[in-house]
Amino acid sequence: MSELKELLDDFILNSKNILYDNLIGIYLHGSLAMGCYNEKKSDIDLLVVVKNDISRDIKRRYMDMVVALNNKAPSKGFELSIVKEAVCKPFVYPTPFELHFSVAHLNRYLSNPEDYIEKMNGTDKDLAAHFTIIYHRGKTLYGKEIKSVFSEVSNEAYMDSIWIDVKNAKEDIIDDTMYIILNLCRVLAYKKERLILSKQEGGEWALHHLFDPQYKKMVLFALEEYNTGNTMSITQADAVRFANYMLKRISDE
Image (tube, rainbow, N blue to C red; front, side):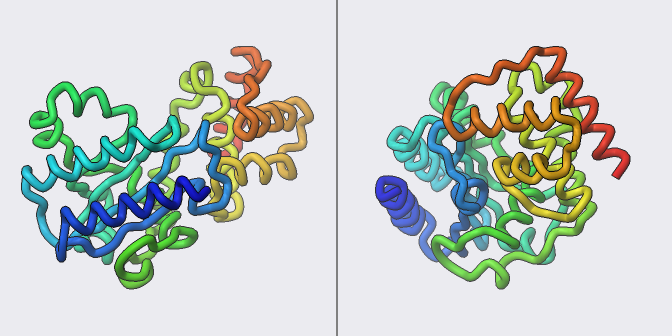
């Protein structure tokens, strides 16, 4: 964890040097904030809040900085968005963003940085989930405290945001079995009990709320893969059956 702290300290220092007095705050969310980070399976999830628009030149400098630090990060790397303070409180949904980065977009940036900077903006419904986790369970790494920057996200916006992540679970679970199993669990936990959980916590919750042994076994397999990296022995048919069952439970709730 000392290496992660050093990496985050570098991120904060570089962000301050590039954004100067436009920087409102840097906030940690996701598994690292919730105490269940796995460097083989987890992103380092960050949200950067600024006061004013960012020029293309600053965006280019910022992206070069992020890519350089991402090369020092664990395999899943950084996932971050930059948003303006004005969309945080009161919360705007779908949420506009100024810039976004994740490992999935790395090659796109490297191949054509100017095009990336021009086009990587707009609105992102995923941000409602990120804002919710920040508000309830996030950590301030630098700048203003969370409650002074963010307002609470409505149940409707948060549910819409996390539903987008699982609505195609019957198809997605074949290629990303562990992630979809645990994500379905945490969506059901929110729908049923308004709990805001990590993927690991969602799986642990499901072990006490799924009464069919075959589905509990699948959740155990998913948790084992998340925590140890051991590949699950679940057939495609069983995975799709689990997705159907969970989507019906979510809809029934």
